Length: 290
Image 1 (tube, helix red, strand yellow):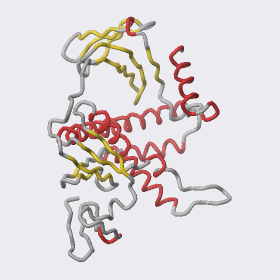
Image 2 (cartoon, rainbow, N blue to C red; image 1 turned 45 degrees about the vertical axis):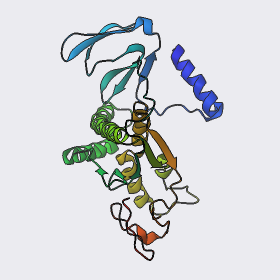
Image 3 (cartoon, rainbow, N blue to C red; image 1 turned 30 degrees about the vertical axis):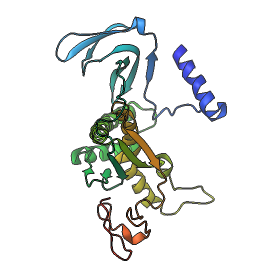
């Protein structure tokens, strides 16, 4: 509880006292953190299992996913998809190199709703995070949820089943972003991203009763596509992976970046035929690599 109060105090100082709101009961996942590293320890019992010692809980058997790789600083226990997880903050004593292994290399990344990330060297990074069967099951669960009574046990079971599906989808998205970011920063000393505000771009267009929004259904589909591709999560993964390779991640103004020719600077809507095809409409017809 002391750590929870510290988090509340930090949120008030960072965002303002009257801008801090209670978490949604429907979307909140229980979690709490143990900051005292002296009372935390972890042991491996076999190839797949281990045990963790936590304050007030004692030794708890857990699945051993991978080695900790450093000295434990804190532990966070959270519930996701009907399961409990414990994650550790460790000090791995790793110092970033003075410069990148391949200095002078650079790449630009275009994030889209058809292909998650397209780099200026012509590579496409994309993956389907939800299977066809999971889509059907999730849609049926949504129908069941709409017919259930608020606060009932059946409604809670339906929400839990939906959470299991979405937790698997989220794990695949996180794994894709981490692997893609690792490949990109390993090969490039400079990574350029458009400064996209995914939270603002995926806001609802429903408006108010007095001023209803326009094209609400089309905007909702666009919002789902943006969130499904994990734009912000890829940006966080790049920033995190760049610390180990001394890669610089630079964000630029996204205005007209997909329409401007990188050779002559000519800007027009017709330059970008698709996310994968760019052909300059200026006299001469340049065709940059991006």
